[in-house]
Image 1: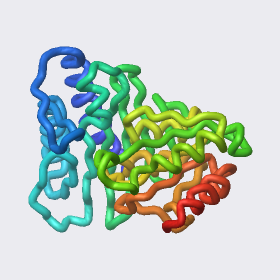
Image 2: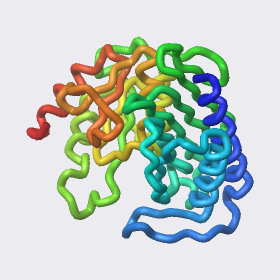
Image 3: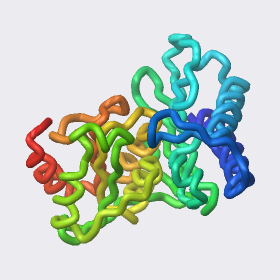
Length: 260
């Protein structure tokens, strides 16, 4: 596992260095959807990460946001978001990260979330704890929900699909101390693991958005689930993560939505 973690760190730092160098510079931006952006920096970051993985583990599979890769059925799948927070990045807002995880036989076992602008490297190995720049992380002890700081996000199709999280956002604004919308789910989850945020929920997420972050929360002593408390996997698009103490309160509010 240490070798796999080293691979993830090397790849994340390489991509993060590129992102920091290109930040607020000139680069090509295109649209994957009406509001879903991708930049050439996303593409170049993914290429760096994939090249690093393939040079060290050539037989492993890769699941990444920007490109499809030939399946090898190896039992080892690297789950890569080369630049989480692309909209922030494209607008010159320094809140974005690299997220890399390794899934072994269906179980995420290693993860890295790297915020290059703040030099924050979150690392995790299943069963060995979660760390930020080498310091062990523990989720917060804040409770009840009224004293908690939460984070969430909204899907790209929010203008055309009523399953857009607007109702839940309003409910939690009333029920919690405050709700933040930062625009990078992987960092939201890492900040729950670090005890800076107390909880997070979001729908319509992808595996690369959450693979490393969910493991960070678990290994920091937090709780993760789906919206009705069911066991959470990275391909489950409705995610709740918390310090554990407020988890049931979060689920109770989500249950008012009337959908599982």
